[in-house]
Image (cartoon, rainbow, N blue to C red):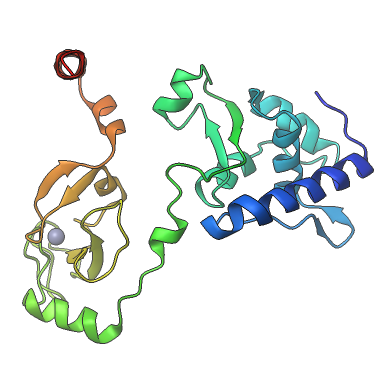
Length: 239
Ligand SMILES: [Zn+2]
């Protein structure tokens, strides 16, 4: 484990601040604050630790040990994961089932800060900001007769597939790689608008038209995965 003095931590934070300003701020990556009151924040400490071990694997155990010096009651450090998925830092985690992490040999329970030039590949913070006005949303729902594009359940009425719950329409993302604006959203009930739907791209009728995230292949059985591998191998070897 690295032992960092207070002044080393402060210096590293100044460097990160500069890097953030030059490369990452415009991409929506969030820089955690260094202190709350007199104490360093856990977020800043974790980020600084990974920065000091840039491009090296760091285990959760090691991070926890480091954080314990400042916060003795800490048992489980989650900040590294959140710094990636929620704050946008390019930190790969071996527990996420990331193909890229797998390629780099990052195992379960390990993290690695990969780059300070760009954001985490699946960073969705910016994509979540939607510019759809209330009027446009009401109009869109009307176009769909206030029904879920996928299953047809009507707003305010019992859900077709889950009759004990009342349908509430949400803004379902059609292509998760593009902004959720008019033209890329459909009304979907909360049962059809599930987080795992990000694996797919939908058409205006709420039907799946494409895989949007290759990780979905890893959820298939081995036979399908092998077929996919052979199929892609053939496809790309001939190019
Ligand atoms: Zn539905």
